[in-house]
Amino acid sequence: MAAVNAMKHKVTSTTLNDGSMLLESGWPLGPVADNTSEWLHHWAEKTPQQVFLIERSGAGWREITYAETLQQVRALAAGLLDRGLGADTPVVVLSGPGIDHGLLMLAAHYIGVPIAPLAEQYSLIPEACERLDYCVRTIKPAMVYAGDGDKFGAALGRESLATVTKLVSVNVPSGAMSFDSLLKAPVDASVDAASDLVTPDTLAKILFTSGSTGNPKGVPQTQRMITVNQAQYSSVMPMLSARAPKVVDWLPWNHVFAGNSNFYMMLSNGGTLVLDDGKPVKGLFDRTLENLSMHTGTLSFNVPIAYSLLVEAFRQDKSLKQRFFGDLDLIFYAGATLPSDVWDALKAMSVEVTGTLPMMTSSWGLTETAPACLLHYQGGAESGMIGVPLPQLSARLIPYQGNRFEIRVKGPNVISAYFEAPEKNAESFDDEGYFITNDAVVFVDADDLSAGVRFDGRISEDFKLLSGTRVQAATLRLQVLKSLEGLVQDVVVTGADRKDVGLLIFPSPAIGPASEGDVVTDAQYLADVSNRLRMLSKTATGTSTQVVRALIMANPPSIKDAEITAKGSLNINAILSCRQALLERLYDDEDDACLLLE
Image 1 (tube, one colour):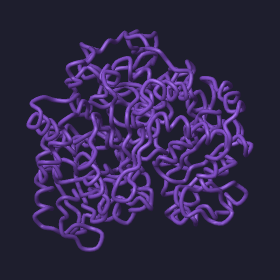
Image 2: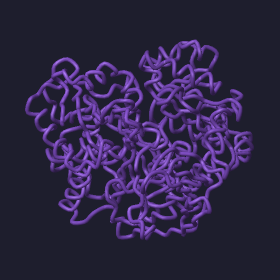
Image 3: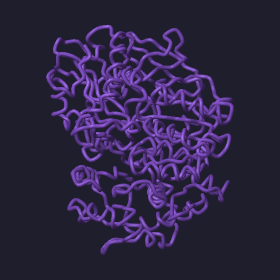
Image 4: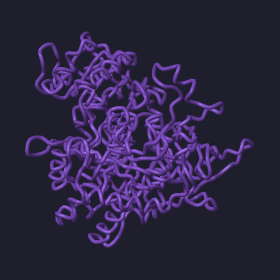
C-alpha cells in the first residue's frame, strides 16, 4: 500500500519582522516537463498500448491508448491550425468530461491554443445562461465545442456565440463542424513548428471560479503552472511513479480539482482515467455504482458527499466494497472537510477488506494555484489536516485571530494575474507578491511544524453579531457537522448583524425526514437534531460559539440557483440570498418550525 512508501514531512520556517511566518518545503522539486505534450510523447513511446482514457459507450466502454491519443491529438492540432486558431483565438468547451473533450484539450495544448472548459450548468440551465454569455464575452473564442448538439443546442444558439465556429461530436447541427472532420486534416510540418513554440509561459487554459461573490473570474493556467504542480505531487508522493495509477472520476473538468489535478496526474504518470458519467446526486448515483462495479482505481479522488454515499452503498454491497478497496493506494478528499464518521468508516472498511490502510489524505489549494499548495503526504492524517507546503511553494502565515493564521502563497504554480481583470489583480497580491487567499489555517501542533496545518475556513465567511462579537463561521460549522454527523448533509452558519448564531440545516438525504412545504416536520428527526445541538451548546465558550436556533430545510441545495458548486461544496452567499424567507423564519421566535435551543 502507498502509506508504506510515504515520505516524511520536511518543513523550514522563517519568522519575519512583522510577525508573520514563512513555511517552505525542505524537499527539492523533481524534474519538470516544459509542457503537457512532453508527457504525451513520453508515454506514447514508452507504453504505447497503455489505456489513457475510458468512457461509457452504450452498455460497454470506449478506450483510447497513449499511442492513439498522440496520433489523434496531432491530427486535431492540424485541424485547428487549418482553421486559423492560435494563441489569440481560444476554444470554449460547453460539455463535461469525455474522450473527445480530452483529445481537443491536449490538441489545443500541443500548439498553444488556450482552451476554456465552462461549467455545464451555464449551458443547460436557462437561469445560468447569462454566466455563459459573460464567460464568452470575456474570452472572445474562435471556436466552441459541445459533445452533443441536441443536448447543448440552445446554448450553441446563444447570440454570444453567433459568429463562433461550432464543433460537435454527435447530433451535429446544421452549420456546425463534426468532430470527426477535424481529425481528417493532414499532419504536416506546421504542427511541429507550432508545437516547438509552446513554452512553459504559454497559456494552456482559462478556468473560471464559481462566481460566488459576483461574475466568475477567469484564471489563466500556464503550461508551467500545470507541469510544476504535477512535479510537486511526484516529489513527495512516490506511489505515483511506483506503478501506473488508475482513477475513476465523475468530477467536472471546468474545476481545477479534476480538470487539472486528476487529469494531468494520469497523463504525467502514464495512468488511466476512467470517466464516470454518474454523480453523487439522486437519480445519477446509481450510475456511479454501476461504473464502479466494472472499473475501480488505485487512487480515489472525491468530495465528502460522494464518500458519504459510497459508505452507505458499501454497507449494502459487500462485493462492491471488496472491489473498491482491494487495490487502493490512496483516498483523497477535497472541496470540504470529510465528516469524521465517514473518515472512520472508510478506514474500517479498508482494514476489513485488505488488512491495512491506503494513504488517507487531503490537500489545500485554489484555482489560482493550479491547484495544490499544501499536502499531507506522510500518512497518519486525520480529517481536516491539509499538511505542509509542496516543493518551491512559499506559504506566508499572518497572525489573524487567536491561534489562527491567514495564509498567502507564492510559487511557480501560482498565477501572476487574472485574465482580463486588472482591477482584481490590484487587490489580490500583497507587497511581497504573495497571493491573498482569504483562507485561515491553524497548526496541528504549534511545537512541531512538520505536523502541518488544518484548514480553518474562509476568513471572508466570518461575520459579526449585532453585539460586535466576531463569529468564525467555518470553524463553528465543522464543530456542528461533527456533532450532527449521520443526521445532516451540511449546514450554513447564520447571524450576520443578528442577535445570535443560527443554523440553516440540510438533512442527510439517506434519512429523508418528513417535511411540509420548505421545512422538515419529522418530530423524531427534529428531536434528534435538537438533542445533539443542546449537547454541543454545553461546550460553547461564549456567544460566538453558542448556537441558539436552527431550521431544517426540506429542499437540498439547488444547482440551478448556484447554491452548490459543480464539485459539491455550498455557495453560502447564494443560499442566504435564495432562502431569505427561510432565514427570516429562522429568526422568528414564534415560528413553530424554528428549533430554539436556549
